[in-house]
Amino acid sequence: MSVLIVDDEYYIRDVLTTFLLEAGYDATGARDGRDAVDNLRQQPGRFRLILLDVMMPYMTGWELLETIRDDPALAALPVILMTAAENVHQKAIEQGATDYLPKPIDLDELLDIVEYYYVDDQRER
Figure 1: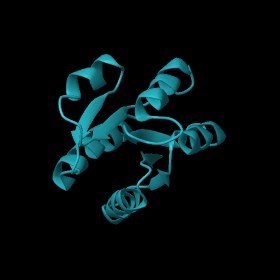
Figure 2: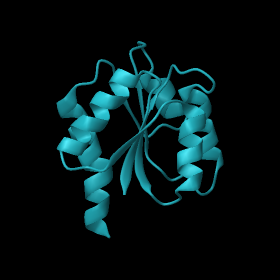
Figure 3: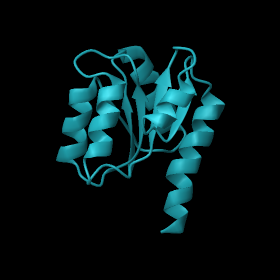
């Protein structure tokens, strides 16, 4: 099981992927919403958690969230929205996000969220 990090900014995607790999998690990056959809559909069952940037070209995080929630095979995946925009938390939850992380990302908070949605679920199985 892996964490899918969807962010069009290479540096952010790379830092978060590397950080999670070094923390012992399997993590993969996707450069935009289309790339994420390809990953999710070509590797069903691989991903346990999605960290999703809101502002991206081609397909925004909002559009990708809607695509995920509308697909029965993907709808149950936890999706954590990430953005530097203010006052987004309530909208994120209303639109179907599982949780929200403000940018810049607090790495301790990131680990808490990943542990909650990734590790705790694995212990139940």
